[in-house]
Image (cartoon, rainbow, N blue to C red; front, top):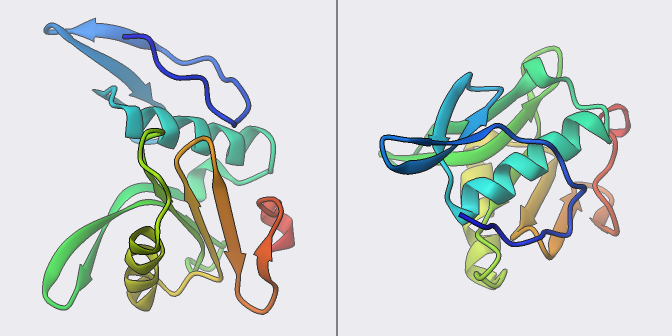
Length: 146
């Protein structure tokens, strides 16, 4: 399954066919997951956070379940500080999906529960990063800058 080139640094991934489906190894969840366009974006983003921006892999949660108004949702990526507080939450969309007001509304709603200082929305091609008290930034801050 050829995947679209993204506006994130290239990374090496373990991709294989499992029971007729293309799967990618998620090193944080330690399992193969279905390779969808959104998962392609999520895996690139996580590798970028770890490899380029110094985010500790042990403090990153993928598809973390959150309870919002009695319903269960899954946040794509949540990064915690060493005290367990969320410092960054990311919402990933597939490259063909435009980042819209609806996407910002979604992550803002999730953040009522998560309360991360930094919110990141990406479709792998376009990225928006907002940090409380700093506003929108041109780039994602390093872990030690949060």
